[in-house]
Length: 325
Image 1 (cartoon, rainbow, N blue to C red):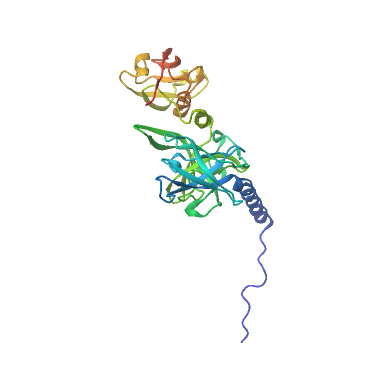
Image 2 (cartoon, rainbow, N blue to C red):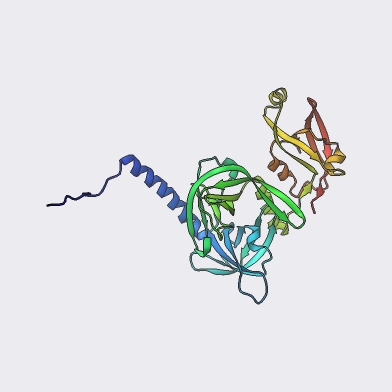
């Protein structure tokens, strides 16, 4: 008895399926081709006389060897090596670290690098394609792709005796593993929009966004090797404005003050729980990260004008931020 063949010939995809797959593959491949030469594998040691005991990734920012990575990757490093896809290996120098944002700058000595193009995480949207490039589990030059699965996440960090919440952290389902920390998260045009920092669960990775606030942090690290932060002494978050105030100001949200620390700059300026902060330093404000941006560097010890809504009235106060120790 003859047995009929179950499958005859290749199954041809529908044209629309083929085009979609080709477009997706072409995008991811293009991003990988652009980013792989700019992402290095880091090996760092923390005690003289011992083998390197830490690993991670870093992304080239300048041709002169300056790279961005995660602060926890190079925390306490006394030496290190940056290895690139072309086989080049360079001694590593830590330029500056900021544990409170989990960002650091390092330099690959004597290297001539191909820097990435930078983007702005503020323009990301949930569902947008992103590509992660790093060195997970020791596998150099690994590429994964996924989507932005959440925005506005919070990442608790600690530095010295201080704690801080990094706001607007990017959540992605692009697979991340140990060793991806410090690697690149890029959009479909190969622009750096985040630095991969943590694996929060299966299919859930977090990246520190590259935005206006983190750019100021990186510039401070490049200039001074550290970040000086101002301190107001309030706790709060985004709250909706009452409809009349929203219509008058042309926006919907403000920072609602929940707590004012006793004898803090905010307390001395007259801020109270229940106040709604609508403007700082002449700029509209509605999110905690926008206030944190004002606290980086220049505001310390200088009068800072704050406009707030209290009992339906707009009030202007002046606070002088102190340096956060």
